[in-house]
Amino acid sequence: MKRFSDLTEQEVLALAISNEDEDSRIYRGFAEGLRGQYPSSAKVFDEMADEEVQHRTMLFDLYRSKFGEYLPLIRRQDVKGFISKQALWLMPQLNLDEVRKYAEAMEFEAERFYRRAADTTRDASIRQLLLELAEIEGQHESTAQKLGQELLTPTERAKEDETARRMFVLQYVQPGLVGLMDGSVSTLAPLFAAAFATHSTWETFLVGMAASVGAGISMGFAEAASDDGSLTGRGTPWLRGLVSGVMTTIGGVGHTLPYLIPHFWTATIVAIIVVAVELLVISYIRYRYMDTPFLSAAFQIVLGGTLVFLAGILIGSS
Image (tube, rainbow, N blue to C red; front, side, top):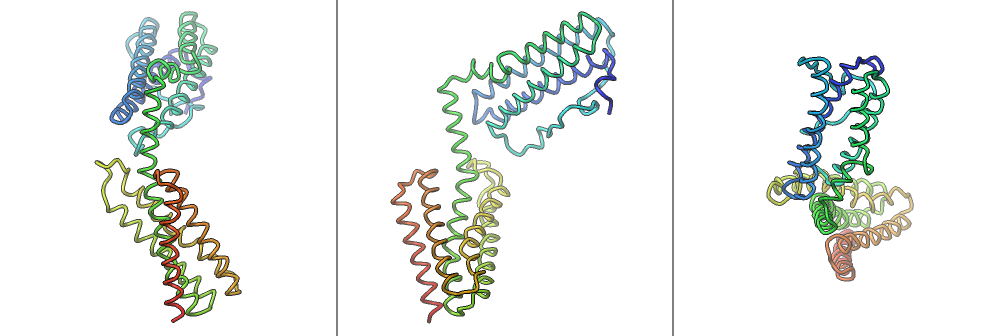
C-alpha cells in the first residue's frame, strides 16, 4: 500500500476517478437491492449513482487534458487511510436504515478525500475541481440526505418504514417469538417432572439443560426447513433457524438456571418466578409486534404455560 501523501497529482486524479466509478456501482447495487420493496429509496440511489457518473466524467475529462488517455488502475485498497468496506455482493440482505447510513458515510468519506487531495495538488485547475467536488459531496450534510428530502416524501418514507418494520417482524421477531414460546413452555413439563420426581437440584438442572438445548436444535432445523423465504419475505433459512433455535434454548435455560441453587424448594420457587416473568415477556412481545391485545395474549400464554407446568408436577409426583 502507498501513503496518500506520496501520491502524485496523476495518481490522485486516477484514484478519484476509480472511487467515483466504484461508488456509482455501489449506489446502483443498493438501488437494485431495494427496488422491489422500497421503490422510492431505490430511485434515490439511482439518482446518486447518476451523480457519481457525472463526477467521474468531470474528473476524467480533466485527467485526459493533463495526462493523456492512459489511466492507471489505483483503488482505495491500494492507499493507506481508507476504511475497508464489505463487498456489496457479499451482503446477504439490505437493511434500509443500514444502507442509508452506509451511503451517508460514503459521502462524508468522499468529501474528506477531495479536501485532502486539493491540499496536496499544486495545479490550480485540479485543485479547483477537487474543491468543487468536495462542496458537492458535503452539501446539505450529504447527497444521500439531500436526494432523500427531494424524492422521499413523508408519506413515502412512512410507507417504507412500515415495510421495514414488517420485514423485521417477519425475519426476526416471528421466528424468535416462536422459539421463545416453545422453549419457555415445552420444557416446563420435563423440568418440573424431574424436579418433583427426584428432588435433586443438580439432576433437575441437567434434565432442563438437555431439554432446552435439544429443543433449540430441533426448532432451529424445523424453522430453517419450513421455507426458503423467497416468496414469504421471511429472510434466509439459516438466519431464521439460528434466531429460532437460540431463542428456544434461552426460553428453556431461563427457568433451568435456578436449579443451580442447592436448596430444592428455594430453587423451585425462583424457577416459578422466572417462568411467570417469561410468560409476561412473551405476552408483551405478542402485544407489541403481533398486534395481539395484551390481556388476550397473556391469558393464552399463561393458560398454556400453567397447564404444562401442572402436567409436569403431576407426572413427577406420581
